[in-house]
Length: 447
Image (cartoon, rainbow, N blue to C red; front, side):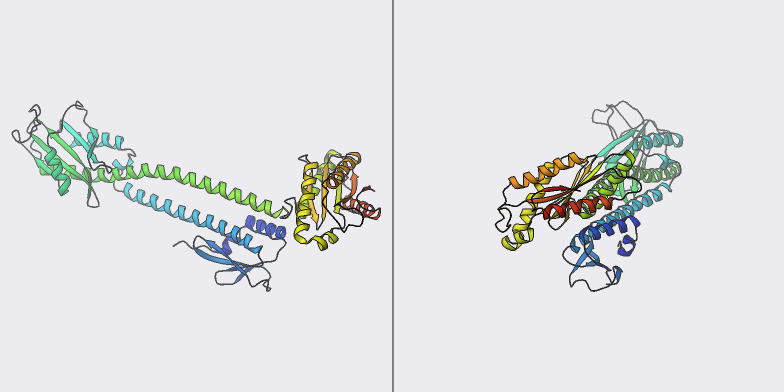
């Protein structure tokens, strides 16, 4: 039985980094326990009475202790643990196949080098000719689908030649014992009497007491096949049977290897999709589906460094929904959530460039990073957002300043240098936003 260690899984640096990103992105504290309930990650403090199982298949290998958001991490770790289990099972299965094939190959250094039935058949026929006199040599295998014998190799006699000793072949298949007959002119002939056999040897191909086919050797003259001939041919057919099984396993292995590659590719795609999903989850605000504060911080630093390299301007807009606390108190938090979603949708509609970013900065506050945008361009974007929100006419009966939901916006623009900091851009935009509120809200200000 395959056993997985949650501790070993979590020891992988990439996974630890990913896990830290999940925790930071979800803004939660968790403890991770193994199946013996020993804490392997976390500070050990009492976080929640809820434990979310981490499963690999049907087996629970640990728990995530924390609030409802911790279930997301538990599900993600369960998926990764399942992938590890699948990899181990596939590796064990492949190893078993290879060990079995290697064992079979050891039976014969010569015959077992043949990896196809056709190549093996040609080799067997040549070996038989070296051992005894023969006019006709047939290598026949039982077709597992219909139970009938199929000729897989012969000594190149005319294809319309019929098999005359079918009764003897059936007897050998049934008993698993070789038959040798000499001088039987009057006993064996085909239905039309145009072929006679004087001498024959029919040998079973047996693996683990199971007959999988026969080697049929005949001659139209009295050869007097001997017990010594039978002994040598029996040794040959024993090796042949083993090699046939190896060749059949080899064909299956090729098919299996192809299937394994497909499975690995599929699992890799699934894991990559899961990784992308988790990364998106860690950088997306769950309410508005905008980028979250963590994503904002990362993106602002990235664009800040790019602006330094290219010596281009960068602008930041901070936007606040006016009197949102009063809105929440009057209409309720569900209506407040719906309001934030609608405002977020307006911003996404206005800010369309792929290089720009709209993020939920916190509470009812939003941030827009405008790459390679001067002050004039930033003012236009801010004013477009202000007008678009007002145009939605979302009722706000307790605003005191306007019967509809409005927004205030602070704008900051600069061309960064190595001596400057993105914090200055944020502080300037924040002061401009404060000034917009002081002026009565529903306006844009620049410092």
